[in-house]
Each structure stands twice: as C-alpha cells, then as structure tokens.
Amino acid sequence: MKNRSWAFLAGGLLVALLLAGVVSNYASSHPDGLDSSLLKGCTVDAEDNIVGGSCPAQQAKDHELADSPLADYAVRGVRNSFVSTGLSGVLGVLVTFAVGAGVFWLLRRRGGTPTDADAATPTGDATPAEDDAATPRATTTS
Image (cartoon, rainbow, N blue to C red; front, side, top):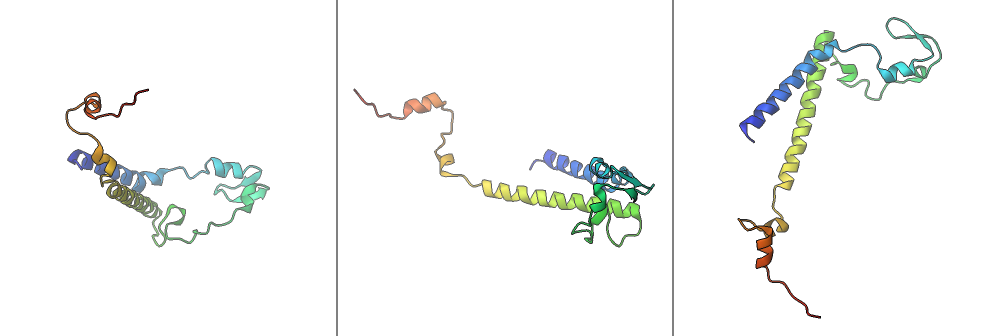
C-alpha cells in the first residue's frame, strides 16, 4: 500500500476515534424517532420514565445483551460517565476497524491468485483487432 493510502487510512481512523471518544458524549439524550413514537400516548417525567397513559413502550423488555460489558453505550465498571461513554465508542471503532481490515485482508489474499482466463488474456502492445487478425479462424463455405 502506498504511503498516501496509509496516511489517509490513519487520518480517517484518528478522526473516527476522536468522534467516538469525545464528541459522542455530547449527543442528545432525548429519545430518537423510534423511541419517541413508541412513547405516544404515555406521560413521561423529566428523566423519560413512563408515569401514566398507555403506549407500546410499556411492553418493552431488556435486550438479551443488556448485561454485556458495553451495554447502553458505556463500559461496565467505569464510574465516570464521560470516560465510560468515550471508552465504549473508542472500543467500538477499534473492533469495527479490526473486523473490516480482516475481511479486506482475506478478500485480498483470496483474489490475488491469477486464473487460467487471466493467463490467456493477451498482453503487450497489440490492439484487440490486431490480436484477432493474428488468430486463425475456421471458415465455412456454403
């Protein structure tokens, strides 16, 4: 890979890490479109807890991975919420980058061997018309 490509890749990774580690802490804590539509018909308090009414959000259950180490955009065991959210974002970026790099590495390794069709492809300065003219053809007469 060229130096320019490595610099672009490293720069993109650095920007992603900064956004995930710092800027993610300033994201809105208000419910997004899906969450707010599920709350229609319910009365909620300042902390978005349902205090009355009837809505689909009352049927919500915890996700199966709610007890995982990175649940709810935080790292379990880290008491500072700013650090916990930032660390969760950084870990997510690094895992995503590692998986993506691994997939691209495997695809590159798999597609790097020439096939018989590639070996039969003419190379050199001959144009396709010249190459066709040099190939003997069977002629049929009627």
